[in-house]
Length: 333
Ligand code: NAD
Ligand code: UFG
Image (cartoon, rainbow, N blue to C red; front, side):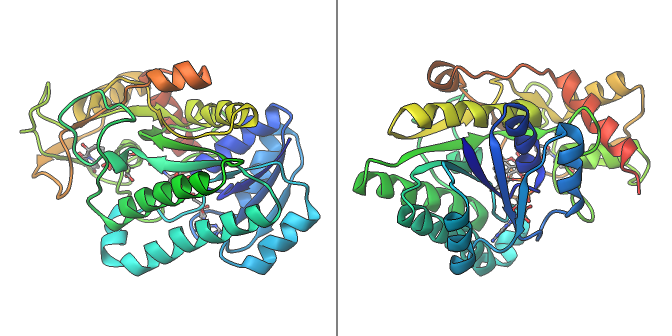
């Protein structure tokens, strides 16, 4: 099967390309490199020892996209491309709505023209807003608290409507929890520009001394140690979930949402302590006030992924923090 991977040089996309190539899928990558680097292409080739085509383009360029679909016989699409910084989306909502919605609409329009109707979409646990009942099932109520989250929810609605209008489509909306860690080679991983917003890349920068200490955002939540609890999932496990999703949409015409999480919640202090223990390194931290918009606790009910996709996570928190540290050590400037 030939798979078009949008956003394939990004963090999750690059790890998924590796799994696809290692499973003998053919891969075509489209990315405008707005949040990733061209070097990733050669790194994927080095890791897999396989070749594939890369098109540097904005997904919103309808003509260019049409050219790709007419040149390549694409069977299915995994759609990662999108902007993802929550804080920036609050500052620049139009940029987020334009980029994330327009690129998805253009993609679906061209897919429709070429009768390619199998799609795996990167959604997010952010569409659940704050839930009282945990673990979170896919049937939970949906709401968002920032423009980034709204783009994910609106795209889910667009895809639902598309399927209702034509059920030859087969669509899986994967709701990721908190992807962390890196490929065991240390060649690819999460490499945000500037000061990281997310916990794991921040902890890594503290571990190598690039930042002096971690700010722990609040220790007065109603959780086991007062710090925020999340469902951290190793990016390689997450990548493998996409292959299972492809197998499902190849056999079924459906439009479904599926959680990709481990089902286990860890607190901020669990992450710090595990990072220190596994990597034998100190991670200094200070407790500071809560971050606006944060929720206390969020973790997945991952039963549906097990039942429908035969997927569940395999890698542990130790594996996550070990690979995150290995990546930062190998990529210090
Ligand atoms: P990323 O920023 O590393 O990768 C996204 C890629 O899309 C980047 O390489 C970027 O250059 C590309 N891109 C953006 N807009 C584009 C456009 N218009 N045309 C072509 N390419 C474009 O992000 P990631 O962490 O790999 O996330 C992948 C997807 O998963 C995103 O849609 C994100 O919203 C979603 N997601 C991520 C997380 C997370 O914590 N990383 C959690 C939930 C959902
Ligand atoms: N945290 C800190 N200090 C930091 C960074 C984070 O204490 O410097 C805490 C947060 O308060 C939270 C936990 O670490 O309790 C995780 O925070 P992240 O920023 O790593 O992740 P979030 O759960 O806030 O959000 C992430 C993505 C969202 C996505 C969501 C669900 O950033 O885009 O997971 O998938 F929607």
